[in-house]
Length: 285
Picture: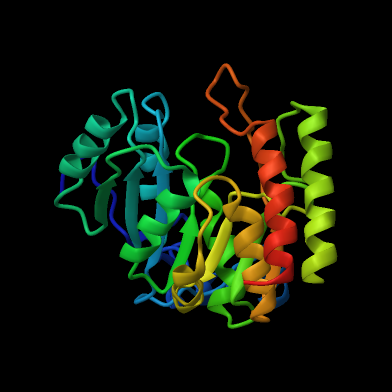
């Protein structure tokens, strides 16, 4: 074993063996040390060894962040399939994706790349990625660094424990750190979420969040009906989840928002489109 390799099982200072994170053996060790009730409070549980998480990452002009983002995804302690969809980037993003795939070609993580011949939008890129997803659970991940992949194990827990079919990661719940940015964006998000809730009868706090996690069979059921190419995907998929009465959980997440100078893409036109989509899909599929 080289100096850079880390064994999955080690010995700690107490003499106990340290097992792979979220394994049955690791969980039993935590229960012995902390007690079952503390483990429940801390979100310590067992992830089945055969569970695979498909991470769908739409990419558009993200050469500055996408490589670092993928490295963060790769170290998350869950078996993964990574699907990168380049939405006809004008910068060097696609070449970086190819380099990432080549670099990790011998790893146990499957990395797939799709490329659109013309720019279509986030919703279209997600549809392309969903069609390739084969994991048990599917998560949406932006290619910037606003959302933290280290939170995957906590976010998928309600699905793993068969309490939920869909999980929304909320930027407005809990005490996780948030970068302070645009007041009017915050107000618009709250208004759109409130309006969406009035049609779907859900009580979400953050309908526009990137972090939406699905059982694979849920998103495959909805996929043939999805039509929105840009950010209208968010209210569209929310309405279709609600109409099918899937079990929805919402969990707090951290958020490191970026500025327009750093590459933020959503604008006021997307807000208008979201309004139309809330009415359109709130009334019918």
